[in-house]
Image (cartoon, rainbow, N blue to C red; front, side, top):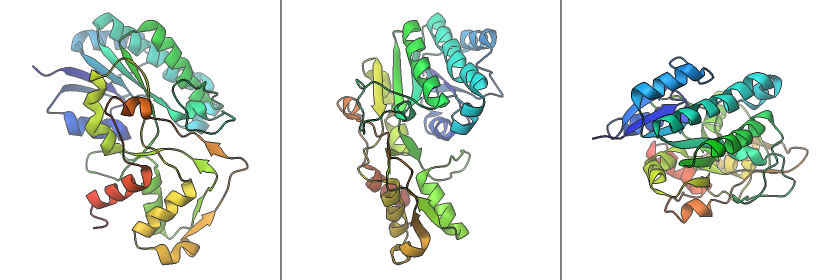
Amino acid sequence: MKKKLLITGAKGFFGTRFIQRYQHEFDILGLDVEQLDITDKPAVDSTFAQFKPDYVIHAAAIAVTDFCNKHPDVAHKVNVGGAINVANACKAQGAKLVFISTEQIFNGNPEAGPYTEQDTPVPDTVYGQNKLEAEHELKSILDEMWVLRFTWLFGLPERHTSINPNVLWNAMQALTNGEVMQERRNEFRGLTYVHELIEQFPKIFTIPYGTYHTGAHNPVSRYDIAAHILGELGQEARLGELLEVNDAPKTRDVRLDTSKLAAQGVTFTESKLAITKCLREFHFIK
């Protein structure tokens, strides 16, 4: 008998691809805000009681930084209150929870990354603060839970899936539209090919409960990554006209040390090579 899996944020970049990949291996109930308002506790409890999931992936969130900063009450209601409702419903049904968190909890740290799970996060945005608070609240509710702090996922448009702003798609859109890219030499973050994550995801259900930094290592800046993408697309000779430096007032480094998860057998291709892999799989390059 297939395991039952409930995923919130089912219409998102990760959710649509996850469901497409595992729809025949799990009995999946994919829910987005149209199907379930996670801030409505009775509705959450009723939905979980009817479906009785074995696993829950809680990916639903308001992740737009500017919106969260401008509407902190709404953001907290969804990102913290909604997550608490999901965790309580998991506890009532005996479901194991995967909570999707973010590298952005380290946005305000003064020291440079990569950060381990033992480092103390200092979030300086409402979204990062929400996610960190939700992590703490959920751990007080559930023992059977994995917290995955994602790096920035990237990928390309596919049939019946949604697309998010991501480093590769942004570059390809700029190239198509004849826009000059402006990237930072002093911003560093992990960039993870979404399909590498999805293909390995069932391994998460077999590893010890806990918090894991999740994604690829990236030793280079956003500017270097953009130059790499343009070079792979045959535009190396035009870098001077296609790409400009636009450094931030201060260095931003939210890279994660993912060695704890790697020790459990979940590993990722370094970001530059992963971008090349993605372009090959979508037949943009040979």
